[in-house]
Length: 198
Image 1 (cartoon, rainbow, N blue to C red):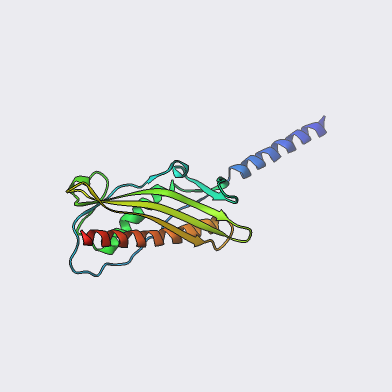
Image 2 (cartoon, rainbow, N blue to C red):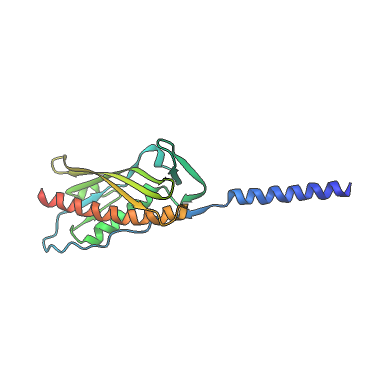
């Protein structure tokens, strides 16, 4: 009887240990953005930057990866601290502020005060594995509108591919931060060039 009780207690402890291990999670954030300044003396008009949207697969905080074409899986013990589109938004705002190219950068509910509007959509943020390596694929679509005429003046898809330093979720998070820095740099410069031509 005593042996049975000890066996049951051991099993319970084992199950508790397994459940704790299964629920353990590592969370990663996106923090990198471009700090490049625009050195033109003439500042551009106001720009409203809306919060990025995301296609269905990338609306959660799951960290996604793929080892075979067309198959998408999420890491069980690793996730983003917030949905990627939500994390990219402040990075975009800070990148445009750092550029010093516009007199006003507006966000939130202040769309009506801005001459130009930037809308973005997250199409992809995924770690792609091959036999020997992995890389982060970050794809974002951008659309720039002249609000005075409601005319689309620029549209571009940015596809950033960055090799991962390690074939792990942490390696993917590290590469994703590099990709975010590259994206914000390219997005900021593209928007500035489009607006300057208008």
